[in-house]
Image 1 (cartoon, rainbow, N blue to C red):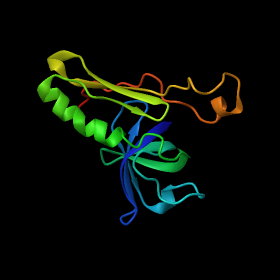
Image 2: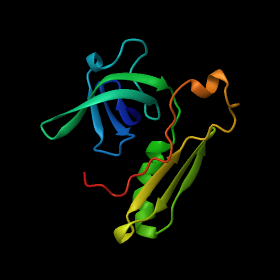
Image 3: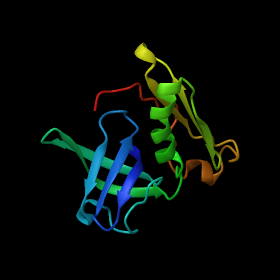
Image 4: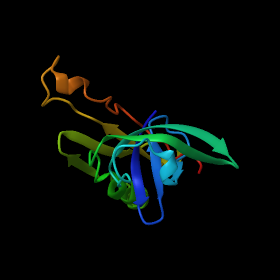
Length: 145
């Protein structure tokens, strides 16, 4: 599965991951859950991971950074979603070549987040286009946490 780190603390060896399947957030705890290679992942890093449910929490393991700093503004956009919910407006940001758009939809005007990784600047068939999977049309629709 692919996810994006939305909060991270290297000092505590903990992180929170927003997953592409739009299920519960995944919690990463301990360096032993990382695939060797790079240091502790930071907010905005795209990761591949496996998850398991333990004590009603979704825990991440076999976490590997796929692309560093690919969605660095995502944590801010998610925080702004609460503000958008109360005002009815929807923030929009551009992160390098990736467009991140949020919109208010659904019952009771709950916010939904659409994350589209645009690869327009990469030539079709080039090695770069196959470098990593992209997050396409990812949505959250006010799922219970």
